[in-house]
Length: 281
Image 1 (cartoon, one colour):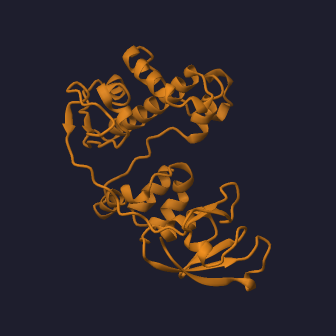
Image 2: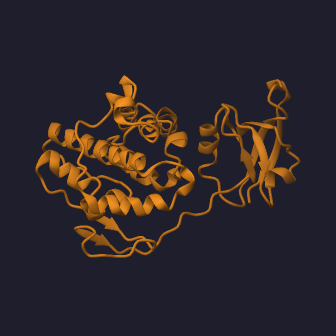
Image 3: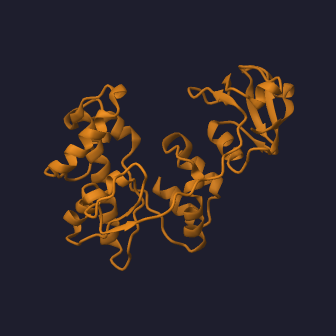
């Protein structure tokens, strides 16, 4: 998806177009508002944004099979080298693995996937820095990929023979240890404002935005919209996919009123579109 990030920074794609093109809402899923100020700052100042991570297709395949069993197109995506020598990191990953017994995976599969993330991000970062020696890069990654240098920093160092600086932002769930990083940022927690909710469960295995059920205190149920209805618009924004819906709702807050446009069932004609006001909860 690097091409789409480049086009976004160059002003050739809007933010909405970039989020669609990168499949953000199906691949990444974190609340985009967490990243939005950084993305906008980079665009305003023409700062490149580099797509570091391994593809979801590769990491999912590695959770089920070994390197040699991958199809050729996925083998071509593998990092050029792996370092398996960090046994302390392996122990920490094992403790993390035990917290997810529902995954059904074996630890060696989990480890393959985690190191593929680490090595892919490190390799992409190192390659970019080799090609752009006058640049410095700020890598934004989860704390597990940064702690003790085990995930990304040491693997960049192996490729570039430089010492990356690691910075770890404090998290309530992580005990603080001075050896965790070169710098620890002790920040007070900051919470995003709650998003406005229509109070519906949506089907995820379809290209349409179909209501599959209702939460407690559901605003959309109180508006007499029934299960099976297809959402086709929010205010003046057309909704065709879940990404469209997420984008249309991105700036909506609890207490806001939206106009929701919908079809009563999946095979209804667009001429049968209904509109109802929804006060978000």
